[in-house]
Picture 1 (cartoon, helix red, strand yellow):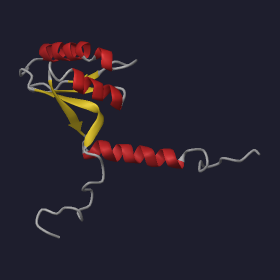
Picture 2: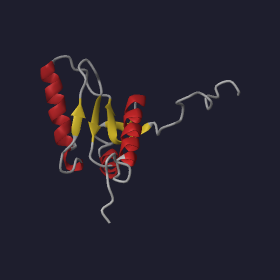
Picture 3: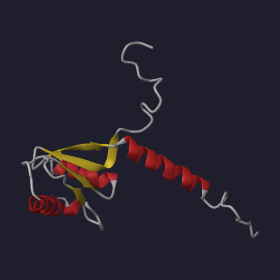
Picture 4: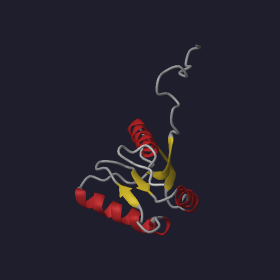
Length: 126
């Protein structure tokens, strides 16, 4: 193991670091009040509305920040928004947290266990 090689460290490279549906919007003016947060959220929801599908865009705007997150319904919508809105906003794919990756892994494990063949008390009625 050479210096900087983290391949043997538990949890390293076990998930895709980029979030498939979430965009990171940076370079925004700093906001301080809840009213400014609400205005920023409304602005971004309107701007990304056409990419959000049936549910629209889910926007998270932290207070005292110069960035926001926009989550869309599908990966394709996020890719389209990334290319088409790049001239208006500074955009990139958001990075997934390890917590998000663990939640997704747990949900997939529960789904594979409860797909109908391994449910406790299930009976074949053939």
